[in-house]
Structure formats: C-alpha cells, structure tokens
Length: 287
Image (spheres, rainbow, N blue to C red):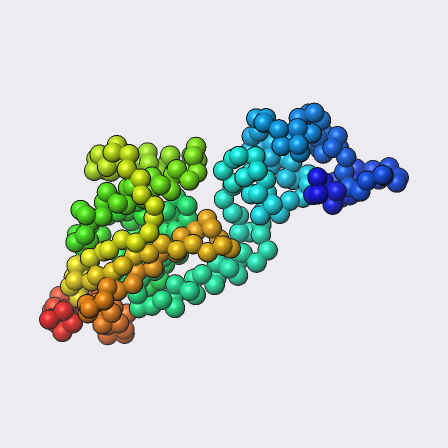
C-alpha cells in the first residue's frame, strides 16, 4: 500500500483524472496494469493465503516501480524464493563487485574466490588460480562440478577423500535454502551425469551448513600446502559467498605461497620453464 501511494497515475501511464482523495494509484488500477483481477490484488495486499507466481509478482513490482531490494522483499513476503540480484539494474552494485575483487586481491598471497548461490566462481585472485586451478582452460567454473571432475585438482588435493562428503552435504544445505530453485537442480543433474562418486554421496541425503573445511594440497612446485577454508557472506550481497583460504598455523604454507606469487615463483611455474628449472625451484622451496 505504501508503494502504491508513491506512484502517480502519470508515472504509470494513466490519465491524471483530477484530484484524488488518496495519493497514488488505486488498487483497481494496479490490478489492470499488472494483468490480474482486482479482488486477487486486494487479497495480495491484505496478505491472504493465495497462490502467487513469480511472473505475477514481477508484474506488480513493475507497476509499483519497486527497486531490486523491494522486489526481492515482495517475493519473501509472498513465501517465494527471492530472485537473484541483477547488478546492472541496481545502483552502486558495480562498485560493490569491484570492491569485492579488491578485497580478495588484498588477501594475496593466500587463495580467495567468490561464488554465486549455485557455487559458480565469479571472481578469484591469482593465488586461487595458481593453487586451486580457478580459471584454467577446460575446468568447469562451478566449484562442485570441478571438485569431482577436475583431475588436476583431485591429484593435488590430499584431503579430497575426507572432504568430498562434507562438500556434498554443504551443497545440499545450500539447495535447501532455496527449495524448488531450478538452478540447483541443473547443477545436481550435471554433476550426477559426470561423477558416480557424487551420485553415491548425494544419495546419502547428508546436510551440513557451510563453514570451515581443512584442505591439504600437494602442489607440484612447493609440496604440501595446508589451509583453513571459510565461507563468508556480506549483507550487501547475501547471494554471494566469499571463500577465503587461510594458512594453518605452525606450517610453512605462507612462505611457500609468498614464493609462488613472487616474480621468481611465477617464472618457475610458467609453462615455458624447463623441467630442470622446475625441479630446481621445487627443491629450493619444498626442500
């Protein structure tokens, strides 16, 4: 009702019609412009137990000129999963995303990346590329699918067997937060088609909230790397997860990462470096 009162007939493309007892649009006008029945729209405003669809809510949101946050709030009030954010439609979101990239770049030399609700990687820093393989050609951008299908990551992840059940349980928890979301169903279908191991773990039905994982990587240049991996959310973009890899205490992981991301380390890790050069670099760092 408050948003209806803020929209003038002229803004909605209607004739002014002279003075009105109340400001803004009438319920009947919103109903006509949104393509719904007047009684149904009245019941929607009254919060009655009626069936609503995303298409109808989008039509109402358009008529009432709701911004992105208000449109998502309308979905929540109606008991539906809110739509994912569209950065291009929301003022300031481009700056927020650029700031998040600066945040994970400042986490260097430790790996960090950003995932959308379906665990698709949308940003990563250089250490995540060098250690975890983010952005390598031929690797799925979806973290769940890459976990089960990327042979390079699996060969490096000494903790793969221990973490696989936890990863699947955390993905099921993410799915349960948005029941009926076809985006999750699509990822599960693709992972099931590509990995029998995923199918077996998914069939268990285990659920676990995302939090911390301990990862041990065996990198060909520097040897063992040990991390505590933490998923973080920020209020301005609750649809995204920032995944930070912090080094485990009492390990030499930080020293190795500093070398890997230095000019010398990048030279040793370059595809142009000879096998002898790589061996020398590995011996000098990993002992």
